[in-house]
Length: 288
Image 1 (cartoon, rainbow, N blue to C red):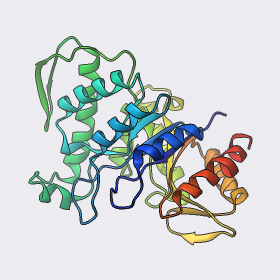
Image 2: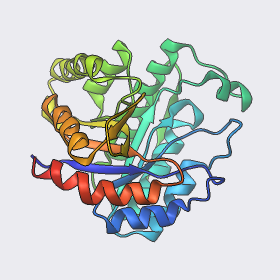
Image 3: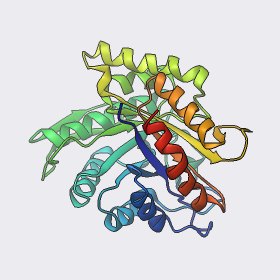
Image 4: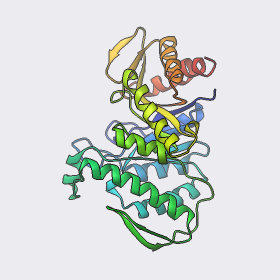
């Protein structure tokens, strides 16, 4: 089984880390993709992910770049579909469009955006995907949703290939949308621990089956923190321990259907940690 490995790059400009250099190093170390999160507001400084990932794409040649994940209500879906086509074309087909419903209501209020209800967030996610797919394929798109609409909208040029959409979803309705419409599912370990994530994945696959899709076409990606240490340590949402121990846990996750991992490696020692992860852990998983 081929397993894909991604690395989260820091979106915090105050940590002293250079995310572009971090991504270049990730490409050299053999990672398949890098990702960046989407938070516009907060007490901690942060880069805007679309702009950050554009710099990364222009500085690398092979590495795919993923938004992990964009809060859909922050950006008009039709405009985002145009942005995605341009990004994907200029990066030579390397964009992974990660979308989420937007869970931090404080960010909506801070930026003067209307706070959607929980139901509206899920409907908006579904409508946004329908608009993007429609604009990428139809000559003209008229779409009338409960939250978003287009009128004879035309997006040119069309994408040269299908731009993958990954969703970071957790609730029953959102998981069903993932199964029916997405190319990938990227839950986070801290929010969806192993004892819960298998059941959530089954709901995703059931949604795919109801939509007459092949469940195997949905790439399941586990987003998790990792720390190479001398002995196993207890950290919420983080696999911390010796290389062999971490590799065993990752292989257990492949046993419940995960074929890709996105690693969050944070702190002053993160460059050393990324090196150890790539050289001491990933080979064990690949040959597992």
